[in-house]
Length: 355
Image 1: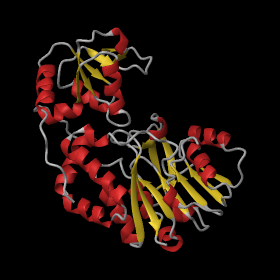
Image 2: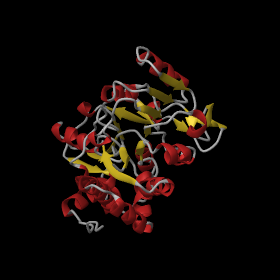
Image 3: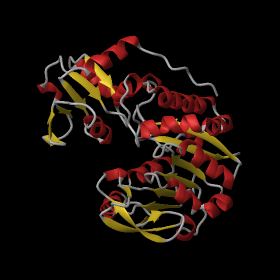
Image 4: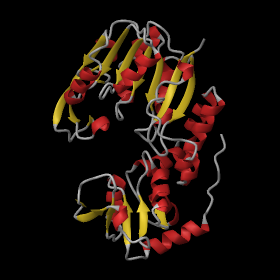
């Protein structure tokens, strides 16, 4: 696997220098990355067209329509719509726009303990592990996706993400899954039940569904959304490698997760303990706890040989560690990869039983 060499865009480098020397800087987006950046440079405020909040970190949040077009903007949109954010700012007449990736690439500012920097470091340290997984992937399209995302991480360049878009309906349900009648579906990280509803569209004659969602508010919504469907089991637990009670941060909607600073406690257990019938398809998006959950479903992987769609974007090393973990349990899977946003989020690794 050969990755691209770092290319320097002289025009963008110059604009980064001009931006950082300006006294008229605004940050687009209010997230952890923008928080870190605002602590490193002097800014006048934040831009967010999708919130009613008026301030963030004691600085004003403004709508882009209310700002002079000559301001300097650093976009910190990275997870879902980074390219759309830039296009929309351009359409609105702004032209002094750089991204936080440009800042990382062309300045001396350092962002420690963030996904984008951790991913680059892990790629450098563990390149041989990435290459091993790349060579194990069975499909050219999946290899191209794998390589594009690694180039994006290595070079801090959004051009590698131009072929991808947000696609919530297709996510987890590619044609190569070949879903049939009688499927037993595990929806791990079920949120509001919409993924299970999408599964039913692809397998209307399913046998049973198990929705795991530790946030009871989300689970109640899922119950309402699926009240007309039969053989749906709603389980108010998280999946892990052993039975336990853990703290849980429920303030992030679909991104709620196990956390030491969580305000509530939840129960977790293993999939091997909780489901006794043969499983045919596992979808898992549980905000970084995937590795622990896989440990707790070894018997189902060994004995049932299920199809799996596993999120591999929550931790910097998920690409190779999760794949290696599953192949160490069973090494007779075909591997596919798909990506469903313009940025860092929603990369899914599929494990398909060999025909």
